[in-house]
Image (tube, rainbow, N blue to C red; front, side, top):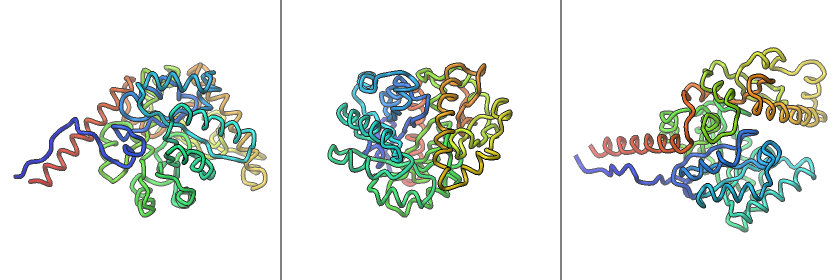
Length: 346
């Protein structure tokens, strides 16, 4: 038997770790309203990367965007922090506001961006002069092709086990579909424990993006009822509702969700199906749901319970520090890598 490297402190080397300049290929995904600055900073300080969401910071947590960034950078010890950019450009007011936030982020040292919705070309062009890197959320190949044409550096594959706006395809199916594009692919959805992370890395993903797992942490400012709901839930309790944004969103089944129903009906359904009116209807739902999500997050189970979560709840059984999660996942992946190396060397 030949010798093999069994150093468990060795750093990871994937396209994601190189692009984001991080130690562990783990992303704490942007979540409304759960992305408080303390959580984002904790993920980055632990060696992964936290993704800030400006709408959450400014409107849900009432923080000044630049000051929140400065606090995150300080708490993260100067380690990289990322930013989520909703690339939807149908509203000039929104686009101008998002562009300003991107410019502030660049001034404060952010170089890793996760874009979602719409065409990411404008954000790619905006951050390119600063050496910025853009990964784009996709749920299938046709959107990945558009993102590749826009010049993104990587793809975040949102599968059918994700929370929030989940995709329709499985973990392996989506990777197989996207791997031919020549871009690094990050797994997003269904990873609630270290075994899931090890499996994703073994399949060939460049890293993983976690959302639900990081809500159940000590740093996340979500109401304790929300965190306990995640601990109690099983994957069968995750249902899709189109009454949050007009398109299916994964939430924990609750009496409130069941009472209002999970599908648009009547006039709302007709407006969502019409190409000329669907954007206005989605905007109406989104504005309404942002308020409900914020109130639910602040007031817990005593209010309208819109608790977004993915099927990763099966692997989550405790509320713990963010660093403990990152460390445990990294150690498991390193052990698996050492085991593979020993088998190959035998």
